[in-house]
Amino acid sequence: MAHLEQPALEQKVIKRLDVFKGLNKEQLTELMSWLVRVEVPPHKLIIREGAVPNGLFLLCRGEVAVIKGSSKGHLRLNVLHAPSFFGEASLLIDGRRSTSIRALTPCMLGKLPKDLFLQKIEQHSLTALLVAQNLARLLAQRLIQADEQLEHLTQHHKRLEEGERFRQINA
Image (tube, rainbow, N blue to C red; front, side):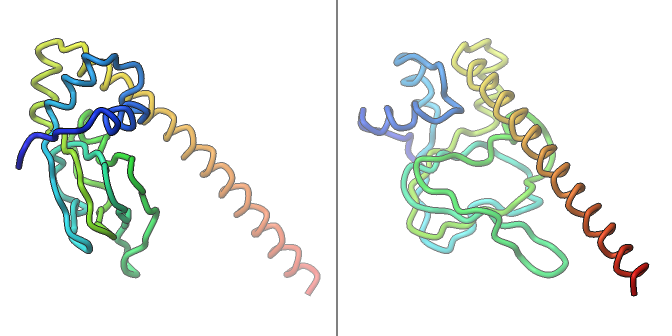
């Protein structure tokens, strides 16, 4: 795998991703030097649910499916289109991958290896620290959204239960 060599235009696109918000040109160039280019054919599994995480992936070209396994099979949760990223939580926390990622089309990825990122954090790299700060912000936002969705589902479930009790009383 070769280090990712991006034309300036693609660097501008990648810089717009929330995970790299606030990075200046030099920091973005430094970050790009950490990335490993990965070419993935269609239908290939990129991340397996339950696997030990090994880094963040930038989706530079193509589309991927986010898949969650269940007792009833596999459920497609989302489709990500370039430019995007996935696997970001793995840079900050230990644990297992929570979903699988499968290429839907030919994909070109930039992989930020977890071990390299952690090494840069230990070296007090401002670039790595800014990325970590952005990751923490994004994960906190997702937690808030999940809490809101859970509240909405809880309220919906309560309304369904009340409707069922009303039907039983009036039957």
